[in-house]
Structures are given as structure tokens and as C-alpha cells.
Amino acid sequence: MLSRMLYSLLNKLHVVEKLAESRPIRRAAQITAYAITKAQIAGRDASQRVMRSQTLRQVREEAGRVPGDLGEVGSRLKRVQRTFMNEVKEGWKDGSRQIKK
Image (tube, rainbow, N blue to C red; front, side, top):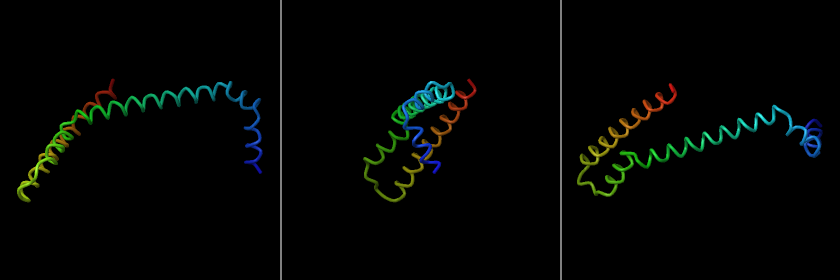
């Protein structure tokens, strides 16, 4: 019953216009737009960092080579792991510096 009443109210143009003009709804829309914009910027920055990543470059190189034996595969994986961990640490430091600003 309540959902029908709410549905009928929201389908009336006058009620929707009044709600859209109210300060709380306008502010919520502004905050939502701000959050979406910030998320898009952060996503774009993250994708650029990944494309510049040493780990990604190293994985591409290692995937192109045919391993001679199992020991060689293990050493390659360890190198990729070290590079990845270094990049994670650097990213963590950069993120904490940006939060402090």
C-alpha cells in the first residue's frame, strides 16, 4: 500500500518539480556529481599508472620468453613479485602523501 502511494506521488510532475527545487535534493545531486567526477579522475590516474608500471612491462617480457626449465620460471616469478611489491610500496607512499595534502 505504501509503495503504491509513493509511486503515485513520484509520478506527479508537480511533486517531482518541487522536490527537485528543494535544497537537500539539489545538494545531494551536487555531492553525487562530485563523487562521480572524482572517481573518474582517480580511475583515469590509476589506469595511467598501470600502463606505466614496471610490473606490467616485466610480465609482458616474461610472457614472451619460453622458459628453459622450472627453476627459470621460479626466478622469473620472483623478479616479477619483487617489482610488484616495490610498486605497491611506492603507490602506498604516494597515496599517503596525497591524503596528507
